[in-house]
Length: 237
Image (cartoon, rainbow, N blue to C red):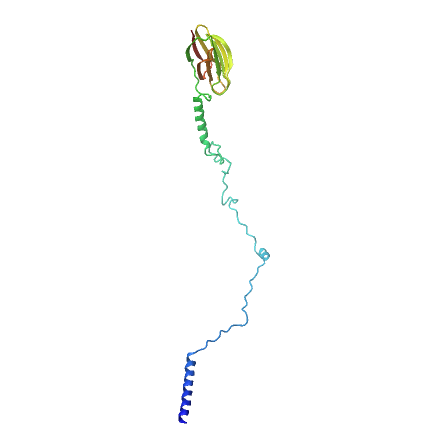
């Protein structure tokens, strides 16, 4: 009986001790408290744009280009003369390369004149010139003449042994031919410049053929002054 009572008391003591130790180590975490009512977000104030226009005057941004007190207007606008202190009429639209065009044209004209391809009011040849001496058995010559440079109204007269063959031939771009009879022995053909062309001195190209069509002479004169002549001497055998 004593043993049974001791066992009951011992079991009870162990149970109480275990419960006490467990209760001291375990602590329950309380559940968070949430409000059942949602939080209210305050509404934004909406401004009436018309009310703002009534309360605040409109602001106009100043244009500094129209205000001459801020940015004075330039007198040199596009298309106008750059400066009143120059004789140049160059504008802002001018090509910078134009200043070289005049020199290039001058050099080109000089080269063309030197090759006899263009005439100009350069130095005139004020002397008689010889186009050669020839021997032939032909009874006549066929003389062909044309303007050697630009057609500008050059006039030529032809003489044979100081006798007039043609009083006036107007030279153009195509050859004009004249038949000149030869005498036995000495024959001198003179081609006299009657005038100056509109663009320069008297300029001509000449070709001479014998009766068989053989080319005897081919030459030219350039910027010959009026009154002077080019001559061919032919000896008929």
